[in-house]
Length: 144
Image 1 (cartoon, rainbow, N blue to C red):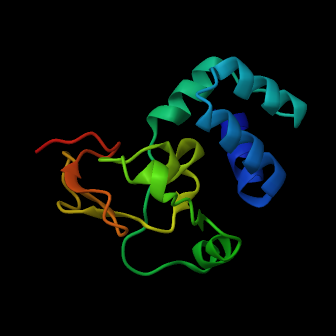
Image 2 (cartoon, one colour):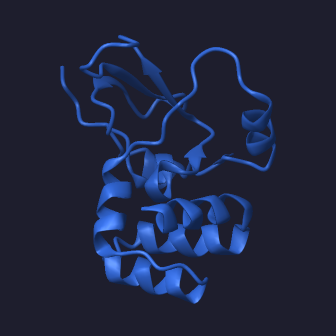
């Protein structure tokens, strides 16, 4: 899992790698394609590493940001992924809203934890462009 974390950290700072991961993720590529790309960049990850990373949701910081969080944000962690034709038909969080392993959120996506600190996630998923506004779990599945 350490190699997967290192790959993701590199992707945060390497726009070319992030674009390749994003393209693979958007196409629904299997784990073997992600693993092959990781090898190309000098990382050794397993299918299990990838499955574990895919099950983990990108943690969102609550309250004040630390200095390193601000530095990471300055490099860009969002982008305008909104496309009226594609997004107009979207009724819930999709790949386009959050990117590869939830690493690059659309500027218009908001995730508000309604029950912070509870074991059961109750998240308000909002597209500020009006595509959706619903209560769901941490991964975007509707619960109400």
